[in-house]
Length: 127
Image (cartoon, rainbow, N blue to C red; front, side, top):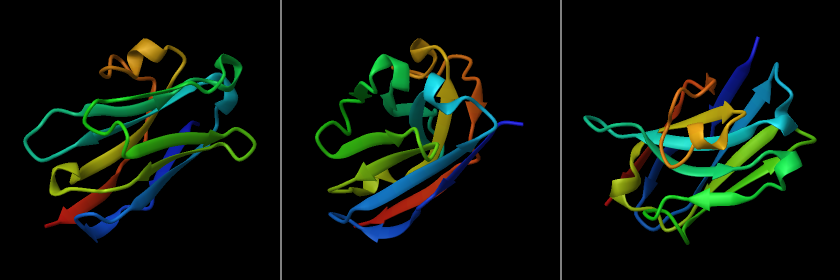
């Protein structure tokens, strides 16, 4: 049974940093592309960042809204993927979800039949 478990969310102030982590189990982690998504109230779930599988070199891609502020990384030995978020703004407030898929196009630039989702972690940025 595949499980993706996010952690690290919380309440921070504008300008602060936060690091999200996602622990994966039940899948051949290094073979999967991984992504982070977010969904704010009343809005569609949007792709934030993705990182290609270990075999694909761990290439990273970002949504324009977070480029230069967020960094996605993975540790194939620990089966984890992280999202370092800097210079947070209230517009970054959302539930953040971890996702895994064998097809990168299913993760970025938008979700498209993603194979596995985590349950999400809430990030709230106060002004």
